[in-house]
Length: 280
Length: 189
Image (cartoon, rainbow over the protein chains, first blue to last red):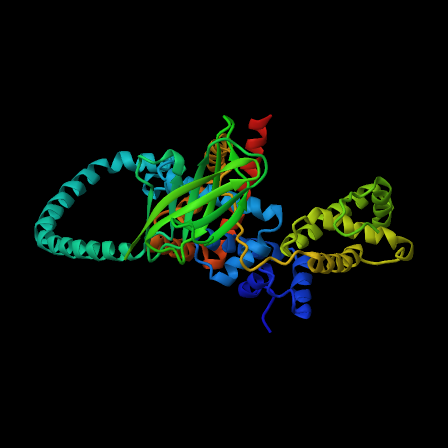
């Protein structure tokens, strides 16, 4: 029998997969409520699930469990939103904080070190001269070796570039600002989908705001579908601009022209066309 | 008993009876109440309930209804937890089953102005972290793809393993979340 501190068991518990196993579920619940030490473990498994959800690395079963069970409590939705904020912060502002450069730490000198430094200055100077001579000689002899290493590094870099090409991001963004009636003379937006793409983050700028939720349907250009649908509330900025933001599974999307049909009981129907191009 | 799904709040009278049951000493009763509340709300969150606070209130309602027969109960937490499990089972049965074709989209951004303020608050809160914690969170998020995996592996090695890193990151995220929430409150007021 697994220990209740087992992270995989905890994960199944948090995704609701033990709900039909009364005895095991009871045991884990009792363990968490009666043992404060478990709190950190449970919280860290929750964070791990959220992180994998955002990375798009969960399998379809776990993803469904996250969306239909795990994210039900508002506290978890808030946790998810904060995780998104943190990711966005580090993706867009990487230069604001850099890891500690340990070499930059300078300790203040202690008195005995000052004395030693004063009397040892001359000896140190002699040592530096000798070291420099040895260093120059060393540089000459190691020059050929460094060139060899440089060539190896270049080869390694080329390999890393190839590997990086394989590690494409699993999420792509698509922004749609003009519906079909307003974009007759402009080319429709295109989104490139790679084999690694799992989710498309879609943002639709709305013209006017309707009260209540919007119905969003994904159709082919020939109005076949819906291939996907959802009911969404718009996000409204302080200056009154409204937009719909959601993520769409990339699975099943092929090269071609698609359209999001956006409707609400109080607004006219909008068609937001876009083109997908599948890249290998 | 309130009908399932009906909105409910714990009445002052019920709350008073509940506190008296926890302890005759006011201060001790409040502390005990806070401890039980924290644990049971957390339990309902773990069980994927959409309104954990409401289920806690329901639990207390049930307990209050039986208080006269519970005078001598040795562990109020154990009793309340037993009731909470039943309340959760009942809630689980009443949940609307999600249809197979249903897609649930989670909004990814709040209002633009709030989002910008959140980023400013996060920047401020990052500065408030201890140098050690800041170093860990920055290195944890550095790089992409394989570089990121390698960086996290090195980080974990330095902290005593992957689980130690996960728990450390969890605590840092919690500190940042609390700090950002406080900063946003300050900004809003």
